Length: 327
Image (cartoon, rainbow, N blue to C red; front, side, top):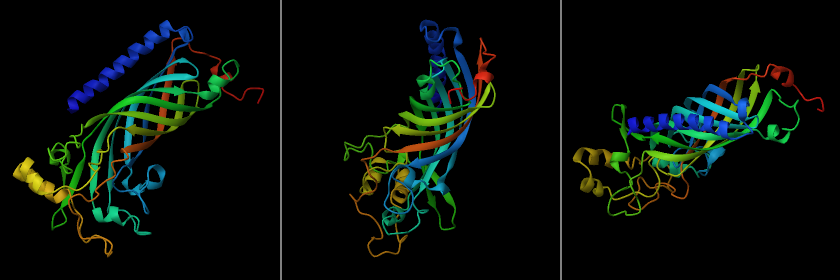
């Protein structure tokens, strides 16, 4: 699966490079002013799903950032600029994501369900996408020849593919933690005949990156950017949690004895984690395990380093990279 994914990544990169050259030759607004940029990006990942989060009632996006679960993302990109206000970007990125219920701090009691659930996960994350960078001020002031500032805000939207493979942990009596891949354990009965609506999820999925950024030109070739990118996904199983608890006897029916034994321990790790009379010491078949109404996602805050080159460099670029006279 991983080898197939990387072949897809390479294919996407080659395709976008070929198409960029073809577009620049065919569309008159680009012509011989086509510019290319290559660069590196690095930054923290923040996961948003059913697991973990922050104090209070579980929410989505910024409110549920848990800094202790921050991971690192890094990647490379190539961008073609047929005109000043538009860039066509191809990206390959590598990182990881993680979340855990036991790190949630008790504040108002609304977070106790997640803390009592006591699940955790981690996953390596590989992503590739093609996106469009849009520079609104360059588009707005396109008719002014002196408008080419050092500081340039932009928006991003694209389409991509990512690969994940969640693992959950079990801790023995001596405190030793062992991680197990969760998809083969079918922790919510995915693929079992008793649950026809719970299909076995794919580890390779499509996503839609959406972001905003701010680029600063150090000189006519080198720039740095800061960017926040959110991924809209179409799966609720990045953290292997989505619906309800199942009858653990089903694991014996569908899994090998070894996997069934692990699944019974890892699908429900609740117990006397939270001393609260409102919570039982465990969960029963059909009890809520996750929220299927929202898909999982993650956000990355990038620091990007880019180098731009062109066959027809503009030697007056630095002179124009200042505030226009009308401002």
